[in-house]
Length: 530
Image 1 (cartoon, one colour):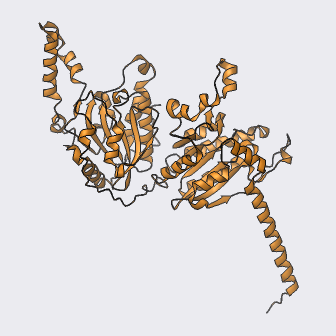
Image 2 (cartoon, one colour):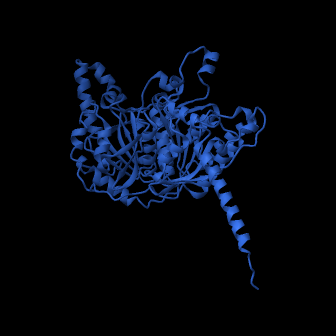
């Protein structure tokens, strides 16, 4: 049976559909534009971009698929019922970074100061759930004033949902927090739960209690940046992994970091064809590292000589500088590098260095990034402050992280490797798959001078010339227990290699270990030292 449709009815229906489509486009345009031109100008006057401008910088070609753009809050009281802007102050969705899917939520400071309300929180919860279900990284662009006070405890509960999802996603998908404005109170805990924190100088701050509360409680006078600015968290607290002078550079570095990470814990990081030959000889290594263990040097130059094209991304560059943690590529494949830095505190391990390296090792293990450890460590930093600060507990964090890691692990002793610090820095005894050493290695319980003073103290004290006897005993100890091949003879290292062969040897070792499969005991989770 045929059905006849009157032309007039078809035309009317088409006109109505077009009218509604035009209305939709108008509403969307208004939501995209934001509350007003003056609000946008005020944001720019502070040296900050708008949320949509930031998203455009993050994603390839600025292309972005928005979720719940038309969401509005349903709160009443305090005049909120008369202010119901679309998006409710947060923009959520997904796009691509170098062709790979990435999810994002971005606070819009122009709407309620980016403060979190019930609808705002539900949008964030949804995009976090989507990222976890899709197995793709999540980037948060933070520029908000905490909880929306007018909505009371409903707003506060929204933070709890974010924290729970941060924890559930930890070690499953990469989570990156980008601080582009204020982040105060409980809101600061979400970035602390993520894998990486970026900050922009002068415009971003993080603190639990602001300067006014600090002044009221303690009488201390301090500025917002002095209390929780980018430099404070990059150098002193260790909360911030990367700090930059402007938002454009910051977001470009976020994009670069994402190219070094897998989409999730079931995948390997992306690899690229490399023009730097795998068998390139590293002839400069001999000049970069002095044979005299008392002379400092910059280990980042050793890393640059080792990795593809001399390029690496240092994590926590300005905090705990006596250890270096970096992401780089070897033969086009991502590796995590942990290296003692003799240029700072002679490369000793202390509380800060232990925490920094432990967190980095755990991140690499979570996301299938092989570990290369470069040792030149004279021990743990002695002192009352370190002991009372819990160096035992903090040093154990690094030990636990290495022992628990199942990714390929290759270590290389450049010079000194003394005492417990040698064991902690991924020695063979705690599970390193392959351990190499240069001919300049000194692997021992402690330095020759200290050992001789203990072992031969009576002979030195009874000698007519104690200093001459001490020098003689030091040489004897070095000849017996600290010669370059002592550890290799006892199977503590797999080989002693020419420094010029370092790149070739390390790449070959990682290639062999690429399909490594290690099982941990069945358990709910470990109980690492805190």
